Image (cartoon, rainbow, N blue to C red; front, side, top):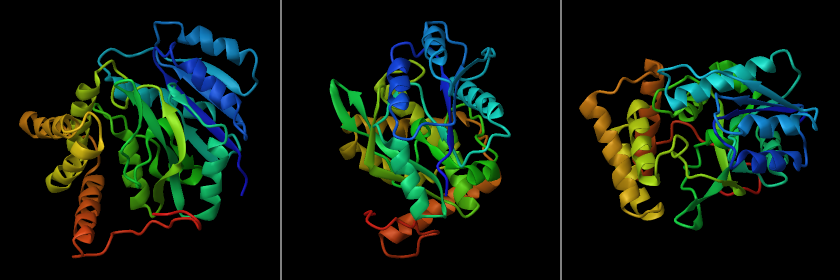
Length: 306
């Protein structure tokens, strides 16, 4: 297997972080064939920073997109990614990476991810995990091993094409939806905690929200992804003791989830995805209590722990 890959980065008002991200890609042990950075209507100096590096490195390509009134932050982000994907159509590559503009990658991030792909031919989406700064401390994010955060996602090209890319969702969660669809088609999705990067902003705060507001929004996202209420309760209880700020983090997530039911927020995901995700979640809950088998069993490469 070859390790030819392209990166797509959507960027909106990232002048404080994007240069760190660019430098972390430039120092990768395996460089991309092309890196398309789509400026999603920034009003700060994001464009100037990217263009400066574009002039110096042949594989960096800047594109701009005009934001459309009425589109949510998350929906606009997906449209920016789609514009980037259009720029690599017809190119010969094996993997498509999505990279947020506020990530500081370790120097061998993509090399290590490709090694996992080579060990498991059924792996369709893979990531490392990240630490993020909360309250002046860098803390490891609480991530389900089946979850692959869009900020650092890497797709096998065939998997990305099979699921048709991301669905733009008003309240976010397009990465989770992509994972569910990938598993529906028989691919595996896996994150590897031994491969760590730095997320320069806490997850959920990209649109200017505070940490707890971000957690509340993530609860709404879970509602829109048709998360089973019992599974959501278990998830939030776990996060009350695992995720800072303790207690309030899990409570805010569950409050956002309940708001989805109260306001009857539309679910934009296909019915088949809703059915599959609940089936997965119920199987996982039953597996915990020894009452059933998993819907699918992730294959962990030799030498990795589950």
